[in-house]
Length: 170
Figure 1 (cartoon, rainbow, N blue to C red):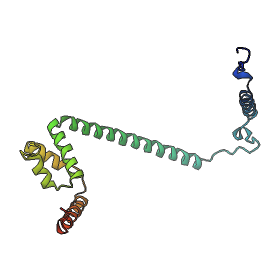
Figure 2 (cartoon, one colour):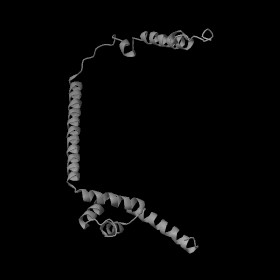
Figure 3 (cartoon, helix red, strand yellow):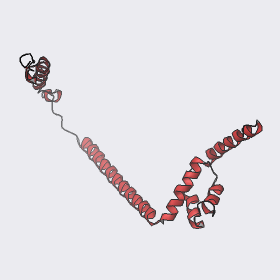
Figure 4 (cartoon, rainbow, N blue to C red):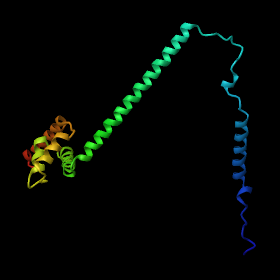
């Protein structure tokens, strides 16, 4: 039985490996032949023209304007970094309870389409979240939400529920 077992060829003697090796070699040889680029073929026979005083002044003015623009951009970047640092510092100084109230307010606004007053009541209610009024007020003042869209969605839900009641589905 051992005589009938087929001996496998090593992978480097198989046809698919040889084909891949030939393709790689052709690719390497092809890339070596392209040493000259278009930028190397610049003609040097063009006459050299010296800049006039006006052209030099215009070039210097342009360089000066670019330097001023870069300086202004750097100042704006620094101011933006300071503003971001102030925002982070302000966020770090906010009590954890206030942050938690804000997250709950966002959740109520997004999922239940509640109004600001409804969210405040839910946050401060002893049967709701039971946050202190300061935390609830912070949440209401700092929540970013489209209240008009929220009111439309809540109205649509109420109308749909009214139709269910009217036709005896609920």
